[in-house]
Image (cartoon, rainbow over all chains, first blue to last red; front, side, top):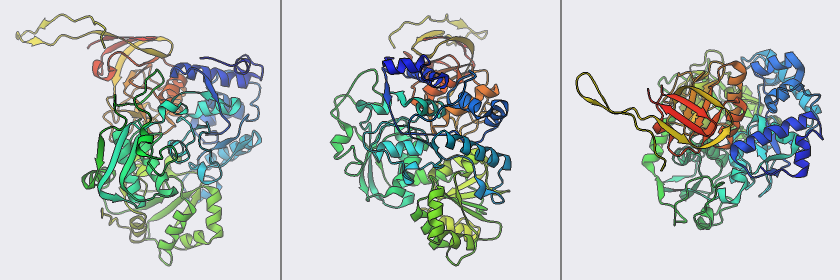
Length: 443
Length: 156
């Protein structure tokens, strides 16, 4: 991999041993990708503060410098000190925070470890956004901006909806990027890897609700794997929350990091533009391009496919006695909190049932200020910041069956917590919270 | 494809029926983490999730819909088509190294940023872009020698 003089100097220790360790990781990673060079970035979204047993052990052994070296730089060296972040860097979602104490069965030691981490990383210049949706709270990269983000639902949103350029980075590559402002120039950073590979046409059904955008995303991820679906047909104009749900689902059932919706997302003014100038070749080209064709055969998403996705997302549910309702995955917008508040207004949750809405703390503050939180709390629900049950492996004590309006959580949470799942609309979920019974169905 | 592979000799079972020959093969690809390791293969035909897909403290696949649900990969050479799901993939596999539950090698059909970084931080020999689909050629239980860009498969 070609290195500039500046990058070679970083590798050789001109900016200290932590930056050298960061460059060493980027060189090993660039070799693994067969990248030609690094690209310069100044927007990192990674994770440093999330508690884990391994991190707690490392902090006990050698403090936060040690934890950052081992986990975020993949280095065994005893580094002198971790310097300030070289480029703007934010913390994604992490564990539950102080607002969860006495509500969420989550170890207090983790809350304390994370508080400690926030002060350490804050001092090093990490913006503690603490959300899986940095684009909802002020980190909105521009079209064409090269970034180093992790969190699959944020990566797909940044690439597809914002037209920024990031691979689905990991803890070590974002850590290394934060100290160097560099990341391998590979994959989504290159024009040739940004064209569509699969055509999904919505026919015989209409996609316009929040739930339907999630199911379409789950379908699109299932058929395109790690490639790039292009969505056309009978779809309504989506909004931020719907594409947030769509992308999270496509990144869950497959590994989609970039999609196009012609006429809506920025790199696809037309269907033809979404598929690019025709077949492309070269060692850095990923994805299945159809030789001699700009637009591949369509895959239809119709009533039968919609039904099949719905059944897949509900196959883990057997008991209709629901004890936990989870909303806000990815983290809720203020409008989603407001919708939940309006559905809960004057109601009361069934006894033994809990309802949590996950949100970025900045938006939870807005919901408090707008009075939505107090309506939700009067009904017995909660708005919780920073985390989610999947990240923190924590749900209300004794939860056996949960319901959610998120395709991503319906997919992951049964595996993580060993519980049953129901997937439905926000209205069905709130209704289940009030009655304690799941009564959902596909309309 | 296109390379020629050593063919096993046909064997006759005691009942006289012809048993298909075990086809030992050598695959060539692109090295992603240098090194040499040999061991028993564990093959997944489905992509693997890291976060939400494995328990790194036990080295076990925990995704309920997965063909390897409940199977432990610690000490095995893990053969899989691709990584899927969360960007926590690499961090979870790094944790398997730190917890002593890591696979000893990785043979990956098609790499992504997630799996490339995952292999790097797991620090085990790893290879991709092979001249035949490793998930079809290799079966769970086969003995595999992974030597930088080459994979030698001994059928079991």
